[in-house]
Length: 447
Image 1 (tube, rainbow, N blue to C red):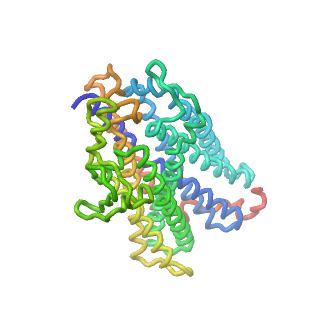
Image 2 (cartoon, helix red, strand yellow):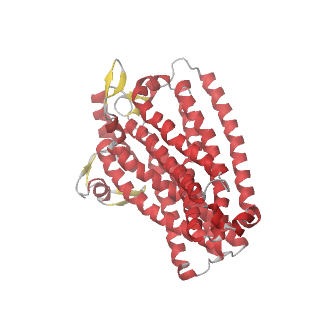
Image 3 (cartoon, rainbow, N blue to C red):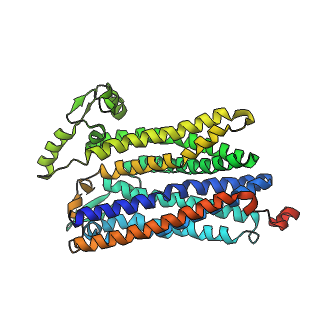
C-alpha cells in the first residue's frame, strides 16, 4: 500500500462520514420550515412543539455537518495538491459561490432563527428558517455542480497544464449537474423523511399522541414523493451515463463486451433481456459498450493503463442503492395506505418505521460509492488520472498519521452525535418544549 491508496481511503472515509449529515440537513430543514409554517397558519400548539423538537435535531445535525465538512477542504491541499493545481481555476468558482452565497445565507438566517424566538416578529422568524433551508439546498447545488464537472468537464480549456474556466454558465448548467442535482436533493428528502419516520415510530410505540401521527403522515408523504423524483431523475442520469460515462455503466452491469439488446442483471445469473439497452437509450435493441472493449479503446486513446473501476464495488453498490431506496419508498407508500382516513398506526408499522433510519442512509452511501468509484481511475474524466492527482511530497507515514487522527476524531464525533440525538428523542417534545406562556396568553403579540 502506498500514499495514493491511503489518501483515497482517507478521502473516502471522511466524505462518507460527512455525507451522513448532508442529506439530513437538506431535507430536515425544509421539514422544520413546513412545521413552523403550519403553526403560523393554524396557531395549533402541537405544530410549535414539533417545530422546536425537530428543529433541535436539525441543529445538532447541522453543527456536526459543518465540523466534518471542514476537513474536506484541508485534504485538497494536504493529499491532493496536483489535483488542486489542475482544477483550482474551475473548481474554485462554484466552491466560492457555495461559501460566500449559500453557506453564509444558511448560517446567518439559521442564527437569526435560533435566537429570534420571542424576539423577531413571527413572520420574520418564519422567513428565517425558510431562508436557511433554501440556503442548504443552494449549497448542495454549487457543490454538485463542481462534482459534475469532474465527471463531465465543460466550459474550460487546458493552458500550461491547468484547467482554465472559459464559461461559468456552462459549468453551472452542465447536463450532468442538471440530472444529478434533483436526484441527490430528492434522495436527501428520502433520508430526512426516513429519519422523521424512525423518530415518530419510536414515539408512537410510547404514546399515541396525535401530533406524532400527523408528523409521521407528513414524513410518509414527503418520502413517497421524493422517492418518485429519485426514480425519474435516476433514469435521466442513466441515459447521460450511457453517453458520458460508458465505463461506469458497463461496470455497474458487469457487461464485458459491446452488446446489442443488453440485458439488465438483477443479480449474477438472473438477467432481464434488453432492459439495460432500453433504460439507457429507450431502444431495447441499442448497443451498450462493455468494459473490455472500452478498455481497449481507452488504451488506444489515452495510453497504457487500467481504465476499469473496481467492478465488484460498482456492481453491488448500484444494487444496494436501488434495493434499500425502494424499500424505504415502499414502506412510505404502505404506511400511507394503512393510515388513510385517520386510521391509527399499527404497532408493527411503528416498529417497521425504525428501519427507515438506516435504509435510506445506506442507499445514499451506496449511491455515492457508485458515483465516485465508478469514475475511477479519473479524478477529472479524460483529463486527470487519480494517480497523477496526489501530492508528490506527502509520504505514506504522513497520510497514515492524518488518517488515524481523523478516524479517531470522527469516531468521537459519531459518539457525541448519537448521544445527543438519542437523548433528545427519548425526552420527547411535550416534556422538553412547553409552549411559552407569553405565546399562550397573547399570540397576536408575536406579529
